[in-house]
Amino acid sequence: EEEEEEEEEEEEEEEEEEEEEEEEEEEEEEEEEEEEEEEEEEEEEEVRDT
Image 1: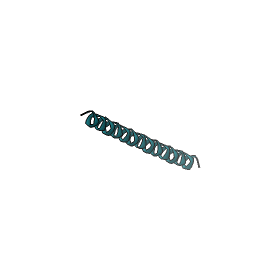
Image 2: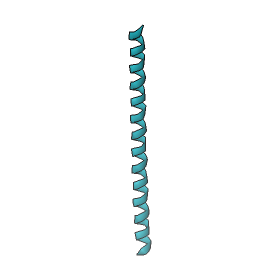
Image 3: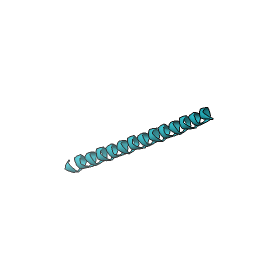
Image 4: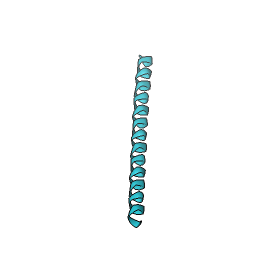
């Protein structure tokens, strides 16, 4: 019985780690998108200036 509990705990930990990794990836993607948007806005402003 103890072994089963340990296995379950390990599985839960693995799942949690995977979820955390996914969240981190999503955050990175969002940051990249924001950076791209900022760059586009800067380019548009430059075009307006000329």
